[in-house]
Amino acid sequence: MKAKPTAATKLHVRRGDTVMVIAGDEKGKTGKITSVNREKQRVIVEGLNLVKKSVKPSAENPQGGFVQTEASIHVSNVMLVDPTNGKPTRILRKLDEKGEKLRISKKTGSIIKIEF
Image 1 (tube, rainbow, N blue to C red):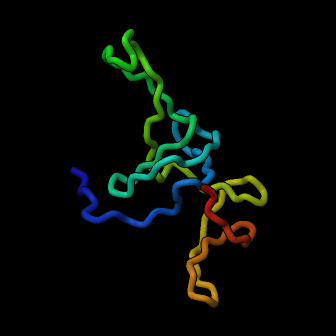
Image 2 (cartoon, rainbow, N blue to C red):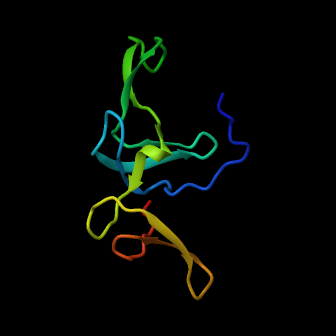
């Protein structure tokens, strides 16, 4: 039986990052991360891993039926895309001279900034 992580771990991706899926049904596709669950180590990528969910009739949706929503993907199955060349890359964390944390692409050495 797998041990559950007790504390939220630091992940290599953040909300707003562009990522490429490297494993699973959506392999090779890219998208932007809309939300991150650090406890479960899962991310939701915009427009990827769509599942059909049944919805009961309500005031908003009197007909009911099926709705397509994005399901989460494990963080190990996504890789950050380098903004300079558009290819997946690993990241390196460093501190600059002001003491601020930077994320640097291992492939190109460029600084990766967060886009919201």
